[in-house]
Length: 287
Image (cartoon, rainbow, N blue to C red):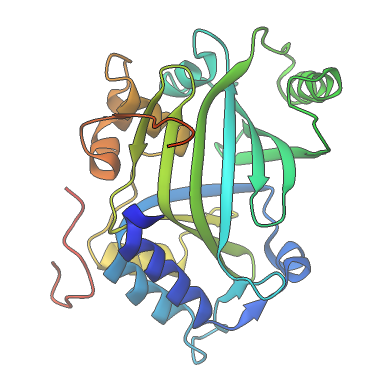
């Protein structure tokens, strides 16, 4: 996380300045396993302004609160995405196919809890998540989890499970989550993405926080605040945006602009295992 000091500090400061909310209450008030997501690449100073407004105790409807587990309000996430040798999942998303999906293992690094997750596109263009716990040395390629994937795809889409899945990309970042009734905002800092096949790495800009608003469909106060600060939604997902940066030869024009904004131009070799709005708090529009 040393490469993202400004964004990491901003996320931690905002979370610790906010009233807490338990995981059980989050699941009761805003689990949102089916939801609409909007992504933003937000300068740290603008993020702090947004968080200050949303968590104000005098906010109409009540303030957003920070997810808190065992006293911790910022959490380390590690995810491994699985795809075919030809990157079927990536290309299905690039082409906007209706029956598209992502498959990943998510690790909550602070507790060691692991989940096998399948993200689908619903009939309204919303994101629908299915998941099941991973135990011990289990991997998503084990028969029971392949059966879960096959059942999920058959039930939702009437299609078979893809053959030849293998790890494609890993992501690591620090996350704080802010919650109000029916909506959540995830705020990620220090994003590092590793191409597990090509051995290359990209790191998100030190001053950028990846903000994702998650609701049943309507624009949130967070969306409106960011729009007022000149920050517009980015065509960006961690998986597709990172691959666009890591593999310039891929046809990935829809993500290329946001990927350059997030990661810059150059992917780095993965190191060996041992080794301007009127209010200055509102940044200028994302170029």
